Image (tube, rainbow, N blue to C red; front, side, top):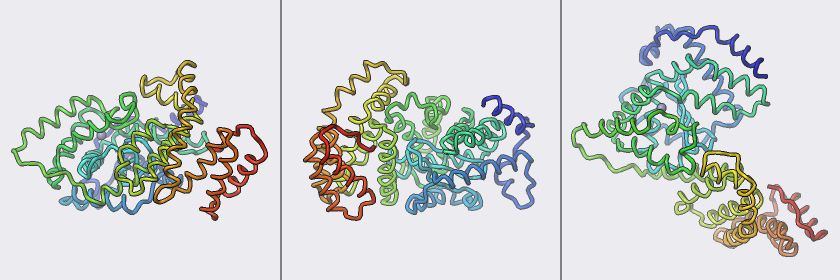
Length: 421
Ligand SMILES: [Zn+2]
């Protein structure tokens, strides 16, 4: 397959030279005639966006879209033509990342929201990505990195079109030179100041990134793969210190920002749970636990984390080991450690699901989970009680058939059953 891939790439990449690329303000003029490579790169970006849309990876979220618009127009208040060219989308991805495409599209991954404290920090990231577009770094990156870009498209066709291989393509677009990164950082600070945002937010996002468990091993994220982080922080500090001593405004804790942060962080917790990343789910849940309007929902997620660990000790081990070491080849001794914590995790799950099921408001799914946990533990009578309570509380549940089958199982057998994840 590699040989086939390589030859397709060779065919598609006839030219590798980089001609000088016009600045964006010139390129946006009506009589501008783009280079052939430019037309090609923009078509590639358009097609990538279409694919992400068709695969449901671009999230339509009114609150988030409105927030992105607000930030964009604040940052680009003096450049309406560029503001019109830039389009910002929310990407259904749990990674703390962002990307800028040569066609003016910026993706903010949902996984950024857990580590953003305020609108200023979001503006710092958006400003940085806008600068990559305005300085046409993204365009140059695509022209120079045709292999990765086309490779991702071809590989996706060959792997059944799951779309996940597009993330390496996005990441490759974020691998700019140190000079380009510093240029984008500096520009972001200028826009932040002009917009009345706290310019220090540009430095704070670096610090927040280090609070992600395992961030030091993550090569695919903007703030880890960006070269010479310390150098960038030092340059930003220098830039901020030479500015005249005007006091920075307070960070913007707009209700719009806080609402999007909570909603998206909750969505990211669910993505982590689905992918069996329990430490990451727990870390992100802790970040918003005090802000979720329903505390019974927090208990439900805590139950999900414990029940998930009990059912998937191998994945729990793999995650913990990776966060600790950056490696995935763990020994059976590590595995045994998590396997031995199974009963403890099940007990914890029961405690949390009980609080959720009896909380205000009652979390219906916690009732089903209690049925599943008890069935898993072999306490069939208690399992039947909770599963019936689930069906009584949610008579229209879409999974009523599955739950009824669990009840039947529980009534017919005394053996521990495998539960649907
Ligand atoms: Zn960058």
